[in-house]
Every structure is written in C-alpha cells, then in structure tokens.
Amino acid sequence: MTRRVWTIEQKAAIVLEGLKGESKIVDLCRKYQISEALYYKWRDIFLEGGKNALSNGSTNRDKELESKISGYEQIIGQKTVELEALKKTLVWDK
Image (cartoon, rainbow, N blue to C red; front, side):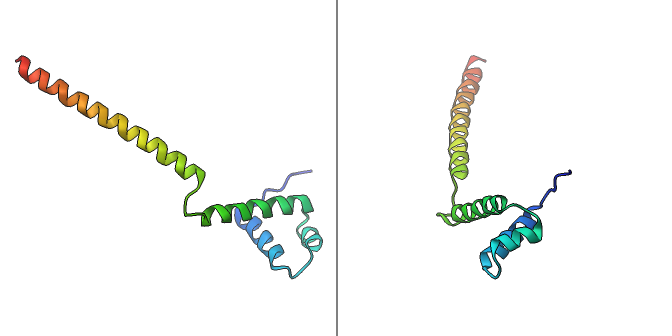
C-alpha cells in the first residue's frame, strides 16, 4: 500500500473544513480517507502555528536567530577594532 503525501494547502483546507463545523469530523475523515487522529494532529499543529504567529509577531525561533545575530555582530565589532589596531601598528613600524 502506497502512502499518500498531502500538500500544506490540502492539509490546511481539510483542517479549515473541519473547523467550520458544517459536517462531523468522522464524516470529513471518511471523505478524505484519513484517520481522526491524523486530522486532530493536523488541527493542533495548525492552531499552534496560528497562535505563534499572533504572539507579538515573534516566535522562539526568531528570538534564537536574533540572539545569534547579536553575537555575530559583537564578534565582527571586536575583529574590526583588532584590525584597525594592527593597521596602525603596521603604519608606525615603517
């Protein structure tokens, strides 16, 4: 038996159809031939993503990346100062 691959758009459409509440989840799952557990897993992921997107416009991943960038900026600043000091040393040695 081959495993079906659902696109993000298909998953979102199925979840949104279930959230509308126009039909029972069990009927929706039969229609798309998916298990109820899979539907609820997709729904939970979908809702969590929405919650993250609405929370101050920033996710934990964004904060991690901002922290890394800040660290890299500090390193670049230190290396720039060191480079300028070395340039001055070379000029005075001539």
